[in-house]
Structures are given as C-alpha cells and as structure tokens.
Length: 252
Length: 165
Image (cartoon, each protein chain N blue to C red):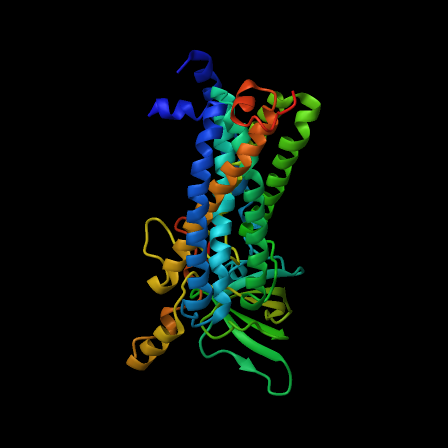
C-alpha cells in the first residue's frame, strides 16, 4: 500500500502511469456527465413549484460540491507537501486549481440564474452566498500564489507559501457547508445528505448523483492531464524527460 | 514518521486548530449580524431598532393574503407560529409567493407596527417533488399544503438559543 503510494511521488513514474489513468477518468467523466445532464435536463420530471427551472440544480449542486472538495484537496496536498515534501503534490494542487475556480464560478452563476425566478433576486448577501464568493476570491489568491510567486521567490518557497494560504483558507469550507444551519439564510439547507434520504424522489436524485460522479471524474481527469504538462514544464531538463519524451528535448 | 516531520505536522495542525477556534468564536459573536433576517418573535422581543430598515423572515400565514384589486398592494401576515407580523407590500411578488410559503422581506416598521416591505423574496425549501406526484397526491387527498410549509423549521429557534426566538 505504502509502496504504491510512494511510487506516485516519483516524477517519472507519475508521468507514465497518469497517462492511462487520466484517459480512464476522462471516459468515465464523459459517460456520467452525459448521462446525468441529459437525464436531468430532458427526462427527469418537472418540479411542482419551480417547473423546469429546478433543472439548474443538475449543474449547480455538483459544481458547488466540487468547488469545496477541490479546495480541500488543494489544502491537503499543501499539507502533504509541507510535511513530507512529495514533489508531485504542489503540481497536482496547481493542476486542479483552475477546475475548482471554474466550479465556484459556475455555482455562483447558475445559482444566480436559479435565484432570480425562484427567490426573486440574483444575489443576496446571506451567509451561504457570501462565503461561496469568498471561496472564489481564495481560489484567485491561490492561483496568483502558484503562478506569480515562483518567479520572485523560487519555486519551492512559492509552493510552500501557497500551501499555507490553502490550509488557512480551508477554514472557510465548514463555514460554507454549515452556513445554512448555523445562521438563517435565504439559501435552503442541503437536499441530499449522507445520513438521510434525499428530499426528492429517485427520478430526480439519480440523475443528480450521475452528474456528481461525472464532476468528480472530470476533476481527476483534468487534474492528471494538466499535472503532466506542469510536471514536464518544471522538470524539462531532468534526465527522465529526455528518456520518456525524447522529442520534447530534441536537439540538446 | 520521522521526528522533524512529526513536529512540522503538529505545528501546522495546532496553528490550524487555533485559527478554527478563532473563527468559531467570531461566528458566535457575529451571529446577529450574519443572520439574514429577524423572525416575528425577534421583532416582538424588541431585538430590532425601529428607525432603520431590516429583513423580516417567516411564513405567510394561511388566509391572510389580501390583494388590492386596483393596485399592486398586497397585505399579509408573517408568522413564526409564536408571533405574527403584519406586512404591507407594493410591487410584483415572486412566483413562489403564496400562503404557507417561507419568505424574506426587506423594509421597516411604521408607526402602527406594520412592516412596510420594499422587497419580498421567496425562500425555497430543500424539498423537490415531481408535479405528477403532487397531482396524484392531491387527487387521493394525501397532499396537504400545510405539510409543505416553505422552510419553516429553519428559522425556528435552535434549542438553547439565547436570542429568545
């Protein structure tokens, strides 16, 4: 088990193994997203109050979930990098960042377009919406750390600084999650919970689950895919790159 | 685990738990500021200053909605089952507005104690139901609007709340 884990720390091994893994997750993402979104947007029954408008949740719920999960993943990768100094972790964190940031943006926008007809407003400064907007700014800050700091303070210190920002920012995640229970908000509490039956019938939550699984697969796919490129960029002059991708460093 | 790694891990986790504790305390201290709206009981208990506008939230009480046929004026009573609040609003209401629905209104109290709203937002609860299921339930007599009261339970006082809701 640990052996398997340690292998992922090796740049060359990661580069070679991730090719197949990213392809597998890519196909699963395509499958589950198509299934979930087509089922949700076309075949699932209309809601008794919101009619077809509720279908926005098939995008909104998974993107809001994955925005938080991705942030937690970045924080955990940062912690692992600070403590164990595994080279691949900051690269994975950098790689998954744009996906997480896009998810927050999608959650905020889809929520706004759902909120206008349902609540009567695009935006309200309640605890859930405000903490989610804060998450978006955290992503932007992290993005700046990961992409701008290396030039001025060296790659390793920059990755450490970004890891600290990610860990500090992760206190916002439970705030987002429980905001609807700790404070009164306009946003409703969760409809699907691990400990309870979903507050909707199977004909509505099955496509939602498919879409959520699809988003998870998409995250892994994009993370691995982008990490491979970032790894090559970071290690272009290492011997293993020449060995694995001879065409890339040809001429030297 | 190697000693220096363990030390580092402990330092990070300790720092994080202090930060989390600080945020928790701040969250408690700012509860009234972070809460989006006051319930009719809060208003009854004098938690709200009368000379400023604020948000009131609750259920639209059954049988109290009165629409003026000549204009867009709507009068209704907002309730949290413990206390009531009279509300007057002029404007277009959201589609989900109806008796029994949870709503949040922005406005201020006038001298008669009526809440004059400038904006009314509908709260949606976490329940979703296919329209066909609702129709079928209605035909069989198994559907009661009262069983789907907006998101009433979520602005009821949490047990042990110090805000006298």
